[in-house]
Amino acid sequence: MIRNKFLLLTLGLPLALGAVGCVEQQDDKPTVEDMAFVKQNLLTTTPTPKVAVNADLDGKLVYLGLDADPLPIEPGKDVKLTHYWKVIAPPGDGWRVFTHVAGPNNQGFLNFDHGPVRGKYPVAQWKAGDIIRDEHTIRLPPTWPHASVEVYVGIWKGQQRLAVKSGTQDGKDRLRAAVLEVKGKEPPALLKYMVRKAAKAPKLDGKLDEAAWVDAPFTNVFVNTLTGEPVRQKTSAKMLWDDKFLYVAFESQDDDIWGEFDKRDDKLWQQEVVEMMIDANGDGKTYTEFQVSPKGMLFDTYLPEYRKYEDIIDPKAKPFSWNSGIKAAVKIEGTLNKRDDVDQSWTTEIAIPLADVNGMAKAIDSVKVPPAFGDTWRLNLFRLDLNKNGAQEAQGWSAPLVGDFHKLDRFGTVTFGNEKGEVPVAAPAVEKKDEVPAKPLDEKAAKAAKAAAARGKQIGAALEGMQKPGAKGENEMKIAPTAR
Image (cartoon, rainbow, N blue to C red; front, side):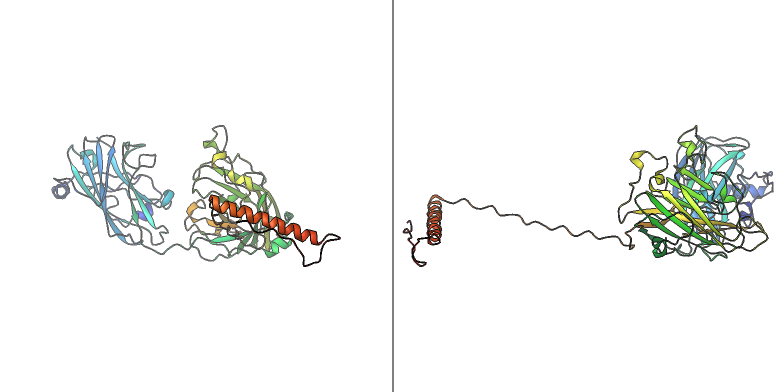
């Protein structure tokens, strides 16, 4: 634990504490000056913070809300947070305040624990009826990649936290006080790829020499997953589909190809691997993950929630225990696991059964397979390269811009097209004009129509008689007088 008279009051320390959970502070006996400062921050009326929360912590405290200035937050610059607490009943000895900030899914976690009111009014001294204003400063790193930051607060002691009875929390009694906008560059646009339909299933041999593979376009060259910058050893991919499989091929430059894992579902990501994550229904929640190593080893798993595995569906199951029907072939230009030579590349050709993107999902939640022309899935493609010096480089098709391949909102979109890479346009439906019903005839008109019909029959009979042998001359015909 870290102990300091006024811990974190020199607010230049936050980055060094990013990996710390809750940090213990040493409370000193307050001076006269300290108490004068505390008095300035004990309010006599209930404030109206810009972000109102009014959350109940175990019936003892109410977190009223906070102010942040300036907004939007600019990475690399100080931001003053002002928290407001109301004391219903003193929490007691040993309790302390914590403040955590993070991006989505707790990415980029930073700890800004501090003694309240600049360390001059510890929680143990709080009294019933107090309304406390607690100001401190935070600073996000200049490379902060997210468009927002989540602020979590709470009260802790040892391994305990005061229970959050109302308000938004993370399930661990961390109260989410606010989500604040962060000023910065817009993230790059999400990538798109048109998957062509293969007239004939490609042979899985790692060669990519069939016509369908030759015609299929490559994705962009993969980039650094954290920064979006170019990488040293380039990777790109192609995709095809038919009514049974999604085919994915990776071409990876590599001057040292190796991989020692030799069992299915080994932790392939610790060495060298290509992988894909597929969120076929685009719900940002359920997804499948597939990996192939240069040695041809396979890894697959179903995730019903973010970073949750098969065991939360079936307590008897172990993480990574679900097996798909994935097939793969690897072709190496070089020598596998010979560390003292120079290799060129390795190509991975993969077939994933379309139905397996549903993993262990119930039928009601399943994605329709095979897809129709124009249907879309969300997915991302990655490669991990581990060089001889032990440094691992992470590459991706659509860069997540954080240290987390599971960032589903950064997945790209693939659209299922025909053999030409097009989505056929259906012919517009021909609109049928409403038929106008015939009006009924009156009695006089009906008699006239009947007489006209009879006359027509007589004329027809006369014409027919002119064609028979022995009939009168061509121009002779006998016609009955018209009825009147």
